[in-house]
Length: 495
Image (tube, rainbow, N blue to C red):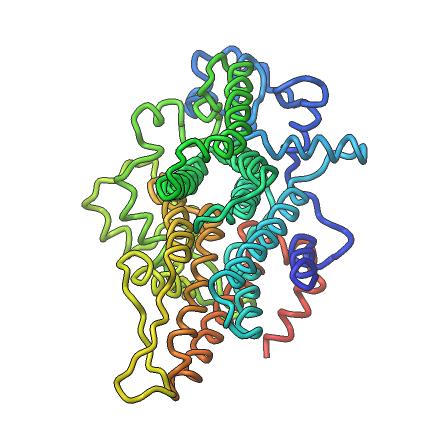
């Protein structure tokens, strides 16, 4: 309840009951769905129809357009996934009000936290039962304040709504499918919900097909191992059907949705968007997603320092290119479409990521962690190795998190909000890593108190940085929408 209250504070700019409105595109699409339509109830300028190619910025100069939308056959469409609009339609039917995207973001971020909480609770019961309660609470707090949760809440818009919704469905699917990892079984209803949530994740954010594919691969490998062990190859087939059927139905519906709009099962509308990056010509060139951006994106997403200013809130992200990075990366010949909106390095905002790095060796190299047993004879060791089930489960979650980052690290546009596309999955091995670190070093006299100090310091720092950066936000709306509170804080910290 405390975490959800914190989220309400940020999304309402600390007005609590009066939430400032942001975009409402998902609400408008939900209203269109109720009316049996797929286009948005926004009328494009009739001047666009007279242009030979309205998708080029140079040709539509001076014509007012909705740059966040796709234009096709004299109508506006959304190129974001439609799944959140289904729930917006439910809100409209229940309340008669069109919800803003700030509500979609709040519900989605809250769902990400709650599903993550459920996942780490299950992992604690299965693999970390000896972890003390205070460390369990630290893990929950680490997830709740993970960057960029608060940043997205304080800067709600259609971009954040699409990303946050996808993560809510992705983590929800993992929560329901979790018993299957490690050789367990799951009732049919969990399999159905896992498949439904994962196709809704893809229906919110198409690039989430990458981590979903990794998680499905883990499930299939586990079923194959179990079938081989039991000698019954037909046993996994019913489970496969229950998991796969919602996904198959969802894929057919997504393809049909695209066909109704654009006459192509695979066209999402991104190519027809009216944004200033001329995607109409740059997508065929392969300049939107390109491995050439990998090194540059790694620099900006991991190494960009936090910008320090002399007045409240003291810390801000970098806006635009970082001069040092631009000089170092100039020989790569990166296409001119490449854009840096805002950036701040995970090395400076989320040092807890090192706990996930710590987890890699015991998971993937089969390294058996040995610790000195204080009560044993000198030289005698006590094994603290992960079981195969733990390594399999945590390994595939970590792999899925890394896979989720690949589309972002090859994308032409850098922005803090895109960290939300992969960090929620990585939060799980981050918590598992800090628990394993404690479990390994708790048997040493000095390390048993240094390790908790290190863990608490990293988590507190990450939470504090995330909190301060969120006060800035991508839209810097705190000082505009709650000037009284902002002025009080500004004057307080002035001295």
